[in-house]
Length: 396
Image (cartoon, rainbow, N blue to C red; front, side):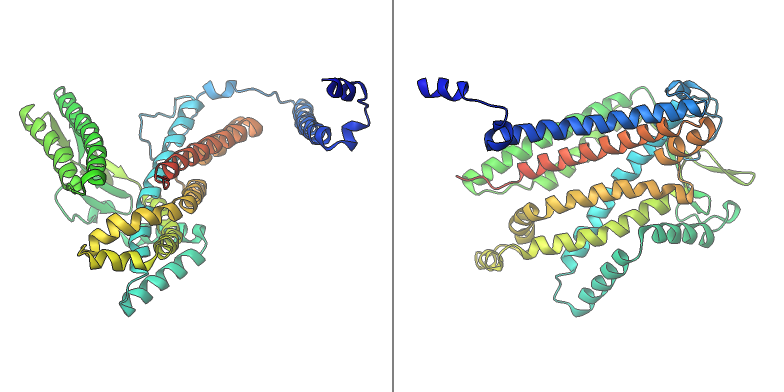
């Protein structure tokens, strides 16, 4: 106690720099203060410059009429709606293209990653050429290429291709029947959610049962049967409370049904194909990181090749695949901002494009766009980090 009192009494200001215990704290405080001062300087300088230009900083413009149309909208939208409604439409378009792209890119990447390890010389070289060509061509060039292919190779609406009844492929979009739900559809939805929750619980129980006894249940087959079969039975019991609205050619274009615009299709396909090349290499590296002795041991025990890949190789490879896979999902999401090049109305084209030009609120619009992409990226990282922890090896 006396030594501590002596140290406190002998403290001097010189120790803030000479003593490493205090120096680390002081440096952190100084750096933090410097960052805040720099940000404050930029903010004050920006406000002064805006005032000199006769502009004010604020977000009231979001409630003014947007006065522009959006071709692809997943929620009702009219040009008389405010800018904030247009921003929401653009945000939904961004989220849809990001989610759809990540799913399709993952499927393609896993397929090509496994085929990349094929002992068949022809398949191996074809996939190799696909990966090298796709990942070395800039993604913007691929977006423009696929958009040009769709627009210039497909027929106009009057001579659209109809592969099946009610489905039309034209250079103005892909038209399919739109489901129209009636009042009894809530029962089908409730059964579907119950089936999904039940299969999650069953899959966890089956995994614990397998670890305890070694008995394997066909979880995938049972899950598909339950998730698809039970809602289908409920659909017929409820009297088929849904109809289809078919697209019809009226004038120079189709009316009714659902449509995927060429811009959406081209962007989705280009981003998915481009990202799948990187995912394929990640999957290949992950599979190769698993010792080949485990494959030989599984074959020696009589395990089928597809079960060996699904139950032994892939679960271990995921621990190597998931961290770099997160970066590819983030890259795909941020690359979706290139949609403005082909006129797909995402958050950059709406809030960061037309709204910005109409209102002159450059700083406010770009701040919102920045925060939106930052939030989406952090959510993706948080989800993938959670999944990575979930599949991590547990020491026993």
